[in-house]
Length: 222
Image (tube, rainbow, N blue to C red):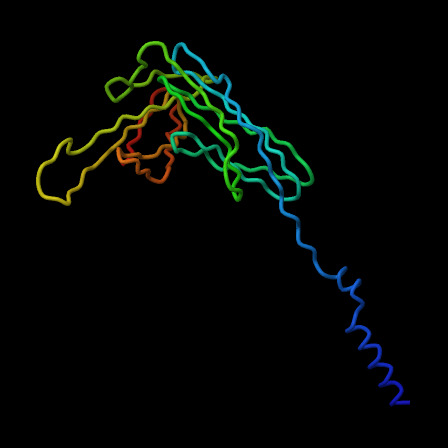
């Protein structure tokens, strides 16, 4: 009896250890399929405009995604700057319209496109052109931005000082640049990036103004 019991136990244990392939496949976890993403051509509205400045151009693009996960994207601009990274969740199939807008104080031409993080390349570019009547206002410490009220876009301006403005002597030496940022309404958050004449670009940064209410706020950006 003991031999028979041991034999049966061994047979049952062997059957459990050697599970059929179909059952083993069911027990194994399945990897989630990656989210596939495509971006339609970005559009600028209006693509061309002329008149009084400051003026605002809106940008939009349709992002089509399929799968399950999170799509992370940002707007990339022709001047080298990049917008904040944003995201949306997809579970199945989804089409999302993503938007951005830029306010310009002087004549400019450029483009914007959508970059999906983790995916090479950009969407087709949305080209735009702004022609301001007159030469456009230049704002600095001596000529501050006028205040704007709620419902109007926040306008930002930058004024850069260099110390010393000229230097002759032994090198290496240090030249200090300081920017004064202004906003037309507070509170406001401004993104900025240092760019030099050789084309070098610093890491983009942000500056947040204090919540003082309507008016002109300034902050120093070393």
